[in-house]
Image (cartoon, rainbow, N blue to C red; front, side, top):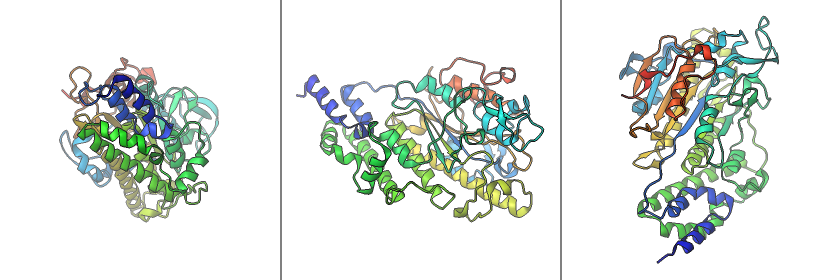
Amino acid sequence: MTTFSSRRRFIRQAALGAAAGTVLAPFVKQLERGGAQAQPAEIPKRFLVMFSPNGTIPSQWTPSGTGTEFTFRRILAPLEPHRARVLVTSGLNMSSTLIINHDAHQAGMGHALTAIPLLPGDTQGGCETCPPSSWAGGPSVDQVIADRIGTTTKLRSLELGVGVDGRARIYTRMCYRAAGQPLPPMNSPVDAYVRVFGDPNADADAVRNRLARRQSLLDHQLESLDALQRRLSAVDRERLEVHTEAVRDLERRLEAYTGTCNPPDLRPTPDIPSIGRMHADILAMAFACDLTRVGSIQWYHSGAYVPLPWIGVGERHHDLAHDTSPGSIEKLVRINTWYAEQFAYLIARLESVPQGTGTLADHTVLFWSNELSRGDLHIHTGMPFLMAGNIPRASDGQPTFATGRHVPLGGRAHNDLFITFLQAYGIETNVFGSRQLCSGPITQLLAA
């Protein structure tokens, strides 16, 4: 019979090598709790944000019908397979942008997750009559949630970007640790992989070289991996097999991405979609391994002047957003539909990971944000905000949000949406961002 000390010795050996240790962490923790007969630990809650730029086409974004009797229009049609998990809001305003009149793209990006005015600065933007600005004047909602649920994991939060302009400026940052403290997203999936799964003492170049030589981080721990498989229950062995295959699949794609280990070219190319998918996979595995509980994927940045040639759009997104001709509107619908497909992929990726009697999607709130509602008008009313997934209530373990619905909210400030999120994560507050705009949680979004 395995003694307590020998089991602990095995656990320490299985955790040797920071890279493999992080990948196997959930299963090592199972043995630390005493194996399959132990009482299951409480499943952590997670929070994930996705951003896409330049507003949308409201007539093709807003569902027809309300409550559970709604129909997705063209842009959100890719979410139909996840209909029961989605909660669409309409009529929410980014009212905090009206307190101080700044350039619309600056304000939208800085307010999207903070709901508070920008600090004074020296960035003028496209509004010549507006005062120049700096960073957002408060923390973003993801970071407040991270303060609550992210203090015991390897990473407090994980910010990932796809094609984000590398310059540190208001247009390129949406997450804020505190007022004036933006968090830069990581564009490279290799760098993200290193940060999440790599040895903290190894640099990214070493990992690139190992990937180029087709050496998996799991290959360094095969003996521990085999021993771990023998000690897990049949259910957990199956989970471990799925989990490790997902790691190997990601590594195979990273091998192709790194090529000869040259820095990746992140100009708008057909490779951009694969970068986004790898980021989504990295976040899902980081959640599954409990290496972080808060994450974000930022597609480009506010006012992004980028084409999307992989869907047949050669014109720059920002230019199209200012054009109301039928041809441009059709292309904008295609662009935003493609972003809906990326959000659907995030949902599906979380649904593929078992957690207790459900999946990661039952323990994660996903929020899709934008810096504008309409790019041609540069407005922040009727924002295209929606959420998916859910988290259990602390009181009875039932789902917190009543999903599978479209809920019109009649001009309410988006501060209240974030108050609703904060309270769902156990943060007792009725204030977020600009205090004067806060009226409390949006009870229409909550399950009975």
